[in-house]
Every structure is written in C-alpha cells, then in structure tokens.
Image (cartoon, rainbow, N blue to C red; front, side):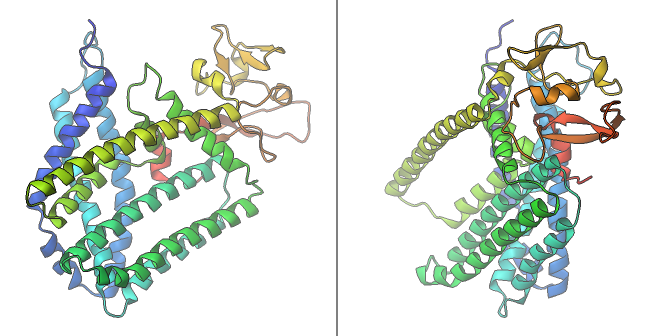
Length: 417
C-alpha cells in the first residue's frame, strides 16, 4: 500500500508533537526557584556541578539519539513487517520523557552560567572558563588518527553551538530582569565576549597542536567538510528517511529538540506580547524565520554539492560503499579492478572503496580530497590483518572503515582510541 505520508514527513510530525508537548510541560518548571537554589551554593560546588552537567549532557545525548531513532523507525517501518517490539506509543512516551529531562538539564546548565554572570567578583565565571584550558591538557598529548580528529571536530562544533544558545538564554533572562534596559546589555557584553573568545582560542590551540604532534596536514579539514557535505546531499535524495539536518546532526551527536524546547520557553516567558500589532509582528517574524530556513537550506545544499564535486564523491551518491563483513578478511571479497574507472567493483556492480588490495591503492584516484598523511579517511576497528607479505615495511595494521560509516555512538561518546 502506498503511504499517505512520506517517512520524512511522519518524522517531522512526530518532532512537532514532541516539541509542543514538552513546551507545555516546561511551564511546570520554576526557573526562579532553580536560580535561587543554585545561587545559594558555594563557588567550588557550582564548579563541580557545571562539569558534571557537561558530562551528563554528552551521555544523555548519546542515549537520547537511540530513543528518537527507535521512535522514527517504529513509526515509519513497512506495515507488512511483523512487529517484534513495543508499539509506537510507548516509544513516543519515552521520547517525550527524554526530551523533557534533557531540556531540564540544559536549563540547569544555563542557570549555573547565569549565576556565574551575576556574581559580584566574577570568580566563578573565571573558574568555568579555565575549564576550557584543562581540555587542552587532556587531548593534546594523546595519539590521534584522522578519524579520531574528525570525531573531536564534530564534538567541538556541537559544544560551541550549545554554548552560544546558553549565552543567548542567559542574556534574555538578564535583560528581562532589568526591564530590557539597553545599558545592562553593555554590562553583559564583556563577559559574553570572554566566554566566546576563550572557547574559540582553546579550540584553535587544541587542533593546532594535535595536527602538529600527530603529523596531520591541514588538508584533512577539507576532507571532513566534504564528508559532512556528502551526508547533507545524500539525505536530500528521494528515498531519504529523514530531513537533511538529521543526517549531519546525528553524525555530530547533536539533538536540537531539547535546546529548541528550552529556547522557545525562555523567549515566550521573557517577551510579553500584548495588542494586535504585537501579534502581527510575531507572525511576520515567524514568516521571516521560515524564509530564512528555506534560504539557508538552499545555500547549504548548493555549497554541499560544490564540496562533494570538488572531492569527486558523486559516484558514492549512486553506488553505496560496500564494506567487508566483520570477521571476514577483506581479501576474500570478490572484486575486480577496472583501469578505466579506477574503482573496484564487486559482482553486483556496486562501488567498493574499502575492499581493495593495498597494492592497487596507489593506482586508484581517491574519491575524497587527497591528503599527504593518508590516502583515505579511515579508522581502526580492532581487527588485525596482514597488509602485504612482500614488503618488509608494511606490518600488521587494523582493518579500515570509510569515514562516512563512522556511527553516531562513537561520535556522541567522543571515544578516543
């Protein structure tokens, strides 16, 4: 039977319903009581709480992505498929509960940051910002592969965007308390700049030394960009099951629903809408946001197509990558090398990148942007195999996986081998 709605449309409806339900549930959470409760704690205790919240946010994001994926798959699976699991409504209930709890966790983070902004001696804010420099010590002196660096880059992007939203929430709450006095905005401005500048400076220094110590060229970031662009372009095909933003955010371990719930809750409570003219302005502002979203998606899609074309990854859009079965050596995969295309094909004619012998690797043009440090974006997965018997320089190496196949579990957990 032909579905009334496409799978991506069903997922969008579920997101909208979850957003509305959690928004009304957030009205029962008292922000003022939470603020005064946190403000009464000591500086050291607040510093510990803030670090614990960062770890909890990363862990609950990894768990929440599985909950949402289970809901989307349950709601969009074929009707003929025998249900060997609980139905849609239990999954939906768990998804609502997760988004609500995650939104509360982010609210506690924003409240702690707000207390730091409003402290008299700014010592708490300074201690919190020094935590970013501790991050350099924990990552610079570790060994990084190219894919480990890719995971860290995605995690940094997510963390930076989340911090920007938290700063916006803090500014909105403070401006509301001072009756939207523009003079108070200039009081907040230096602290906001300090938080943003420290975050950017730490990321620059961290990535600079990681690439230096691990002999990774700067060209690898072009490969990362091409990989994210490939995710965005491939999710805009007709057979895509989710929106284009889901594919990229899933790779980064970013879940926008809790942030959206909290931001809408804070905006609606901070800005009072009274009168017909005010409602007209709200409607016009909403239409402007929709237009901006459409324009943004068009620009992103165009730039992504450009990056995919520059990286020569168009063939992967139509010929999915075939990887070796876990536990089976890649050499047992039946493949032939076509000199005209430079791409090995299996018996079904699908393009294979990861199943190629090493001595053919140099003759094949890379489907990604080439780098001096490595021909492919690969990551070890724990399986040891013989690369070559002839060369004495090549030793046992880990089996490789394509960068595009790094799962969200590794990214959300930010696991570094």
